[in-house]
Amino acid sequence: MKIFDTDAIGEKWLRKLAGHTSRRSMVSRLGLALVAAPAFPLLPVSRAEAAKPDRSPEAKTAFARNAQSSDDTECNYWRYCAIDGALCSCCGGGIHSCPAGSEPSPVSWVGTCINPDNGKAYLIAYRDCCGKPTCNQCFCDNTDRQTQIYTPQLNNDIIWCFGTQSMQYHCSTAVLVGGAE
Image 1 (cartoon, rainbow, N blue to C red):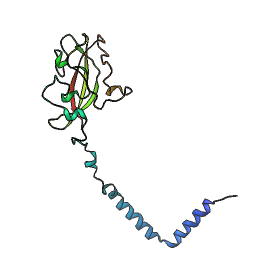
Image 2 (cartoon, rainbow, N blue to C red):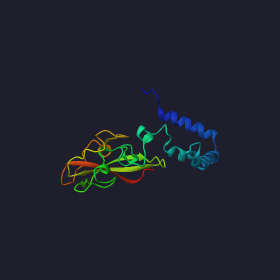
Image 3 (spheres, rainbow, N blue to C red):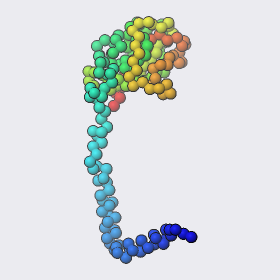
Image 4 (spheres, rainbow, N blue to C red):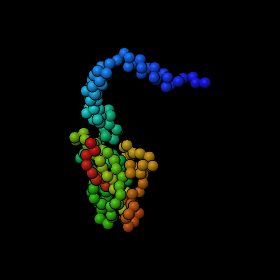
């Protein structure tokens, strides 16, 4: 026993449609639909404005609101938004160079920091300098936008001395990779 005979219902509906509609009107409706279809994606959506990140002071993290760009030996220097460890700029190196006697790790973790001077976001690669005892100066632990350990390239809790002669951590650098937008 069939509850619904879909073939019979479909046939009845199509015969009724064919009896009340001409071929010419169907072709004209199909043509109208094909001509109007490309206009639908342009309707009230402003995709350019929706894609812009919110750089207002309220949307910034606590680190970004207090960041400065004049002293690279302070933990609130703008490039240090996701750094964890001693700053190489306090340990005989620079913001992007290791001190003498240590070597940079070939791997790094990354962060996206906002420069307070121009309000733009930049991708920063944090690289550990290895091979010397730990420099106990200017220790910072900034966790701006840090992710869990299961996303290691965005986590600063790992000693990143892989691929160096020694796994002994000395200090960390913050190399500007480029614009993040």
